[in-house]
Every structure is written in structure tokens, then in C-alpha cells.
Image (tube, rainbow, N blue to C red; front, side, top):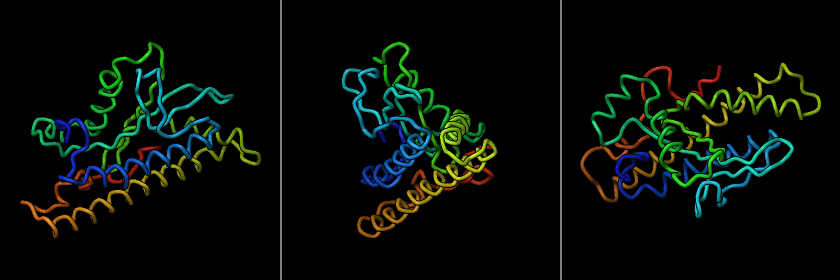
Length: 214
């Protein structure tokens, strides 16, 4: 659990969580950024973030923009911290906001001044950090502007498609985690339902699997 600062997961499932959910979201974001004309590559060293920092996505200088670094993170309110859970219950999106601030303020203390770091933080139930909708709309406008045959009115359709793809990627990863947790519970039971302790427990309300792009 890394002290509760990262996503909560069942013992032994860290690798599954990373490969089934995080990595797939990274590649989906890579696809979106490239459609917008950005020169991005996965898992690259970025000296602007520190001497040996490796980022999920690194954007190099191009006509479309850059340089920048993007860090994808899937978080959960279901940490082993009662106070934190209460804060999440009282404030929608608290888990994502906390992680977003942590990445900007603490995770890369040796970041070069002025370097652009873009945290792409989503809660396991589907709510993205409030900075993501504006980013998606901006990228959609860039994509439409550089694509022959598309008019400005197509931006909303592009945003909706990307939102659906991101949600589907997260849902698929959550499902794989449930499946892996069920297999582990049979092979090596531990107290409680294995799947119930996962970060992919679905919260109630309109936050379920939505990007909150309007």
C-alpha cells in the first residue's frame, strides 16, 4: 500500500493492478495526445523532473506544443485511513484532489523550475480530477483543427468518444482486478471478500464511471 499514499489493493495484486488498469490508461492517453498532434512517448526518463525520474508519458517539443510530462494515477477513497475516508465521503473527488496536489507538491521535489507536469488522476470508481475535462476539451479542439473534414462542431463528439474510451479502459481494468482477486481468494483465502477490499469497489451516485466532461 506504500503507506496508503497510492491506490489500495489486495496483497500480491500490485502487479495486476498496474498492468491491467494503470498501463492501459497510459496507452489510452498516449493515443489521445498523439491524435492532438503531440510528440509523446511512454515510459521515458525526464531530467526536468529529476536526475533519474521516469514518467508515464513524456512530450517532446513539436509544432503542437511541449515539452511536458504526464503522470497517470488511479486512486481510491478506500484507504486504510478512517479520517481520509471521512474526508472523501464529505467532499466529492477528495481522493483525486489529494493525489493531484501530492504529485505537484511532493512527488518530484527536484523538478526543474518551470517544467510542465500534468497529473492525470482518476478515482477507481470513474471520477477524474477537475483539471482533466478542460485538458480533454483543449486536446479535442487541437485534434479537430488539424483534421481535414472536421468542423468546430465536432469537438463535443470527439470529447464524448474519448471520455467513453477512457471509461471503458478503466472499467475493463477494474473487471480484471475483480477476477484476479477472486482467483486469489480461492487459492489463498484471507479474512473478508478479496474483491471487496479492492480500490475498484464502485461508489454510489452519479460519479460511477464518468469523466465529468460537460
